Image 1 (cartoon, rainbow, N blue to C red):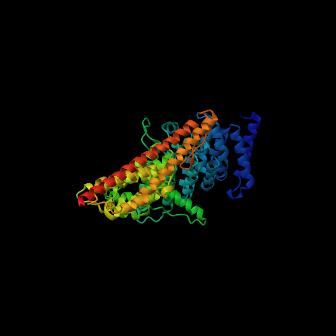
Image 2: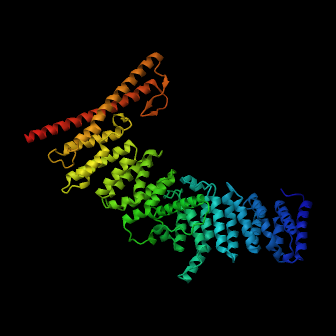
Image 3: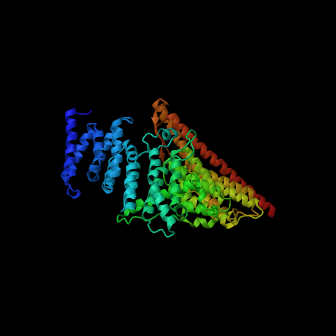
Length: 606
């Protein structure tokens, strides 16, 4: 609310008195007291709602030198007043004109610091509003700078992005359309803000092929890298029905265009060029810088190879195996994250690279690269630990794609690696099924693979046909692996005659019986006896409690289950017994087949 007329007139009179006193002084004679009095009087006029009078003072040509030196002090109260008034309020328009005048008249260096300080001081819902308000005057000031321009542009972009980064990125269609905090609008405005500086770099590069003034280019590159890390890494970038121009897809396109214009797009994608890294003395800062750069480059690869932003700029001379190799580092970075929006980008990038390849075309030598071993292990972690079912299923299908692309030796090496590292019975069972499929292909082809027959296969079977802890192995927890191993052994016995012994399994039978079949018999007997005793005890406890609704706990496979009624506990125990019966029946069938085959072989020899 405006103050009484007499007080208002006093505030305006005070401002005029200060102006008149300073008009007769030389610029060098301005004192600290003059700055303070000008700021207090100007702020008082703004707060009392008399911006029109202040605007007249600032527009007066006689006050040009005073405004140049002192005007930047009005930025903070000016921004506060602008947010106080409604859009169509005349007082707000006066404040906006004052802001524009200050951008034109003030000392650029002082005003730059004042504008950046104002942006830094905002938080929460006012961040985007403040950035959108101050981008134009900030751009005007930067374009007027003669010295340290690149540094000032970089500082401005860094301050803006640092303020935006804590804001949540809209993800769903509804959130993007609402743009509650204004982030979508802000991203586009920041690109528009940077455009004159991009044009300046382009113009200078066109003048000379040996463009030496790289500082401004480096600052723009840092801005693009930061934008890739936030908001694009976590943003939803798929086309959304009902949104004509997806704001984050537009922002991604604009960032890619800047990288292309400053000739950094191809080096970043294929040479992993990172620009000049700061010489941090603190090792922690170095690690943060490296991680942020890795996130940005991974996001860039996703934009290019999955969403096809800027893909027309790339030559089509690169083979699919090389593209996969280039992207494996990025895929590894993305798969180590737990956010759905980032993890899904890693899966999509991996799938996109694999779908470009023919089956059996990826040479086994690629497994000598660390990433080609690490990525499938990360994929297994997603398959087994990710709480989102659709991502678990997708990771399983991508693992199968990855397996399918390797040549026979590559598949063989990958199977050995995953059997040793997955530590998950379900995954091991899945790998064993894949081994069975490869053996089947070798036995049915005219030219069999040396990797899935003979001594190579026997070496692989040493990892498959055994119990990890002998008879003490938890059979329930390892049931998937055990069933897959028994089915594989049954297949080998049926398909491979003892006389042919193409797989080598008949020569290794004694070792298989010692390491797998006999311990499995002992383990089954122990496990069944244990669970039958548990069932007996549970039934006795139920009779003693006189109620089937008694809540109790049970431990299965070394893990304590949630509290459950006695009836529920009995169901779990009976289910375990059923699993043991199933394993026992397949085991019996395998041993029966072995006996029949051996007898038939002896008959043939007699």
